[in-house]
Image (cartoon, rainbow, N blue to C red; front, side, top):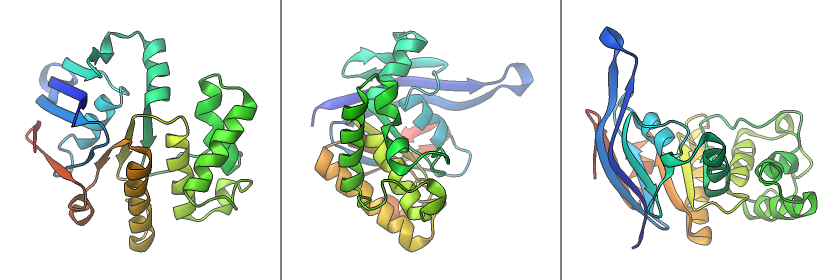
Length: 224
């Protein structure tokens, strides 16, 4: 499969002097178009840090991240933010929905940030909410939705602009087992339907084993 992302000798260090902590220590990875990968490892090993670097939320201390051959961190902050909004979808353990807005309005947000006309934003948001099974919940606010439904809205919001990459950080960690499995199944289905590259950080090895590839983060380096 063709490579979408190349991570080349990425280091990430926090703090200075005696308080300096090396989290990532020369990570080399590639991800292909449409791939399904799980990042696993002990607590505190840097899984979320790696995901944040992949998602351009955090700049590496050293090394490069190439998207379709382009060194993405050469972009300035404004262009990087536009790239992130358009090309990368994020799903976190906590849904981060805005409580005063409906499911439809929450899902439209990336479209409006990108400058799409409101009518087009509504159309795209309705389409993806239908796809995640929430066609009857468009006008419900987060407080009126179950935990699983809230996370489905978060997934819809992440995918509304048709990104090439979906990054999920413990997306089932705040849900009961049955609900978590249904959200995990949804992510896998959307990987198939949309062809989106799916990269999940999880401590749940049983779920990780259902992914096509498992990447183990050990001592700041990636194996697998």
